[in-house]
Length: 358
Image 1 (cartoon, rainbow, N blue to C red):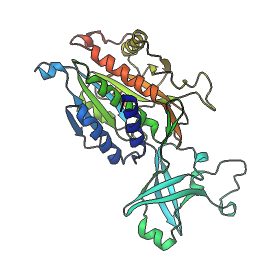
Image 2 (cartoon, helix red, strand yellow):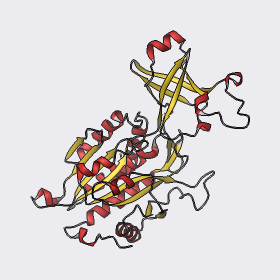
Image 3 (cartoon, rainbow, N blue to C red):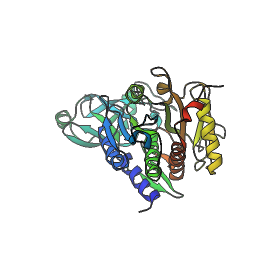
Image 4 (cartoon, one colour):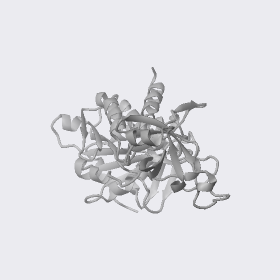
């Protein structure tokens, strides 16, 4: 199996797993299994952050080494059962949802007695709190129906059980993949591609591949800085791709390569280094202006402890926070390739040039 096919299959496997923010164990275990042969050590922190550590030749030879951290959040959006009323389930969102896309969605309730399938439906018009004519029905007027009667439901489901989308990923033409949780497991695949390519390099710095938890809710990536103490950090996430409802300046085309963030949240030297390396390697790229905080793990990492030189690479993604997010595997591989080439060029003196100069 070639690298692209292998990466596709891995990505499809991890977006088929539950991994709602705060409940990432299943997907974290799958990622750890994939990273184990590509790294020297796997560690899971007390808050669930996953560390895949690949030593550079400096530390392997007993010398002091610098550390670069690649941070990708493993969690996705989901739901939690709020209450049971008769034979239906009311739920609350975990992360950001657009209620317009929920009616008719198939879901899986992860109950303590096992997974149960259900569908999200809106209440009958005469049961709604108001008509909502011409408007989407809000979340608190949607319910999950499992087909179980009230007594059966109370025996199998309880408040606090999590809910995830049930649809499986599928491949589109032109190397595109669609499915839920590509935000941000597409970036997990990019880091995996980077680790794969690093097997061919004798790199100097220690590399920390980090799968972070709860980015969609409380940004537990801030705890990684005290764990790793990185000299440089690269956060990898998704950005809006051009598509229906996303115009030219707000979205990046699919297959346009890494989108390199710049702005207050981004170290200017790292931005310039990555931009120049793309040009040197003929990697297509776009620029992503970020006048304030990026809304990604880049922000809590940059501002944690005494501060970390941080940059952000993003993968274009259509239909964010829906069950049919879409990415191009070419963009995933290009982001991974860029990071591997950047890491391979870091030497004992690289940190001397990384000074904040606006």
